[in-house]
Amino acid sequence: MSGLDRPFSVDLRGLGDGRHELTLVESGERLDLPEELSTSSDISLELTLSVTGSLITAGGKVAAHMTLDCARCLEPFTREVETNIDLVIRRGRDGLSLEDEDEEETSASIVDEWIAFDAPVREALILSIPMKPLCSDQCQGLCPVCGANLNESTCECAREPTDARWDGLRTLLDEM
Image (cartoon, rainbow, N blue to C red; front, side, top):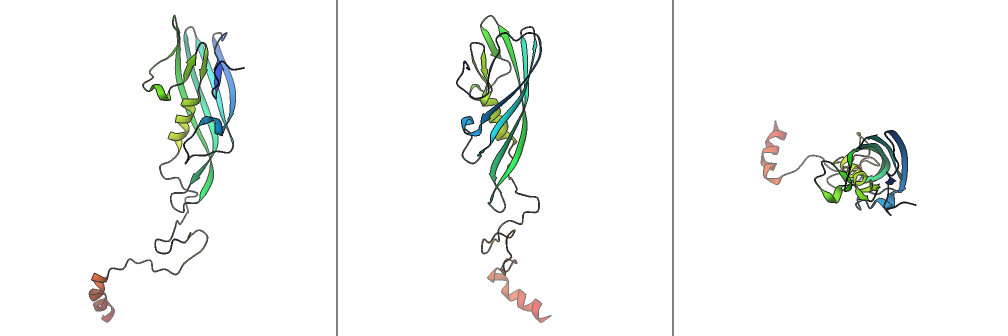
């Protein structure tokens, strides 16, 4: 039973010097991701803890299947996302503390000798999503005139922008 009721919690008591490898798997619903980033699959964290005296370095690979909306055709698609997390933890007289942590709301939670990696995992997943996710590099997007998904069908809409102010000049070109 975990000392913290949070995803990706690890008990650091009794960890001796050396390298310790863990694989943690949590449900995507427990991670409290933003609405636009959903996952129906589990999120895995392959964590390596290296203990050297009072210093603990935690590094890991986060993997999940995320459902995103394509920036061109607006259709949902699933993509495997992989990213890394790295933290440095120091044991001191006052217990465990994170080094070089600027934002408390995105830091790992430490209670007694338990540490929860849920916030760093959530942050890493959010930052790994591209600004304009595409279902494929060949996505043709939507027709700007009728809104048809050009990946599924073609339309007969005129692709040239028309501006009535230029009609007089177009008639001159047609006469040539």
